[in-house]
Image (cartoon, each protein chain N blue to C red):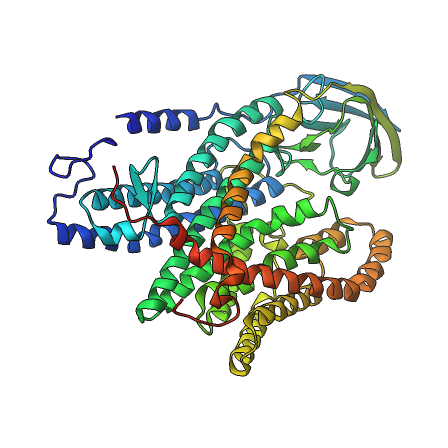
Length: 407
Length: 179
């Protein structure tokens, strides 16, 4: 079906509608596709969190566990959404729909087109299937059950999921920008953008914190890793949306997602284990595994970032400077309020003998303020980076779209 | 047709061979830990480096009323799992056990055990036993395959950044919501 080109010939992707109606169907379908795209991305994040908790607390897996099902279904929903959007946009463009052509990017020598965020998501979903379906299964045959999150196929899987989430972020950035430029209410699009950003950065954090620990002293690394991630997120969202209040909304959405996973993931892991006759290990605490890595007080940082940009707009400061201040204040708030991710604190307190914890605790306390100062500096640089990254993300469609008709 | 064929191939490739829980222990040995005779079971024998492994421990008379700690001595030095505490094996709850661990390096290993019963504390050592070389290909190309998406992400990011040049646009310094 891929090779049908002439519009009068019947085709599975030919909607057989008059041109004007086909036009609106393609555009409306693309707008609504953000719903299943985000549902898929959210499912994959919840499935990932559940799977990590499962491996931590219970252990054994076949491919066909419920957390895998949730993760793979989520990727499937997101990937199929990208496929459908591509087919619908391609069909409309082949009929000469200029509005669709002006909002889409051609691929495969111009044969197919879709908005750039959906193309990134679609290719990443295929990469995920290759890493999960072939590389990871072969790895299991060689080494048995997973004993670590950081293995070569898992790195490929994690990067593929990251790319799908990045595709969703680009698509949702486009929705916000379109709403603002058209003068319609941007708030629904802002909430969805906040969700896309929260999912992406929450997903990235556990791997980044773990990988970072290989290079940086144990007392500094959580703060540096969370600064790099969340100072970027705060100024990036501000820069993409350009809607006063959007960053605070993102902070609230992030906190709601954190609360949901904090409660849902350990609960569903225990329930699922008991429903199939398996037991939680004696030696685990049941502490939320993925949410345990995440900063709890980000919503305070989002409030501070809003305040900085409000003052900057009123005083006509350069917003590049405001972004640096916003990055620094984000770092100060999240690192000072929570120097060590909850999961490590929980681990130290529950698993270290009292005398070792007794020696460690003062060291952690003594390194707190030097770490905050260092992270403030890093946060300023990262704030500048996030601000520019936001500009790149909102502008990617400008450089990626070409209005020519597909072959 | 080609697209459907590709999809079907992808779906078939996605179906994995099932991976089952470790089967009954292929290797047992008896270890004397003070007054306690302990049957030690390995789910893989010989164990290979980095391959997932279950080790079960069954003291004579069962585990009730006793506690155990263990320190692993690898060629590279000692380490502990779960802070040294040996819990029940989650799928064989009458046994103590380590489930889904991996011994990280090949060579001669020992495991020091301390068992505290109702009256006495016993000490003993499992091994020395030999852990074979890690199976599978050399790690570097595997890591490079795993990191491949990073190349795509990196190229995409650099090209986009260079073509957009965010620092030169008005919205770098101004709010300009409609830009």
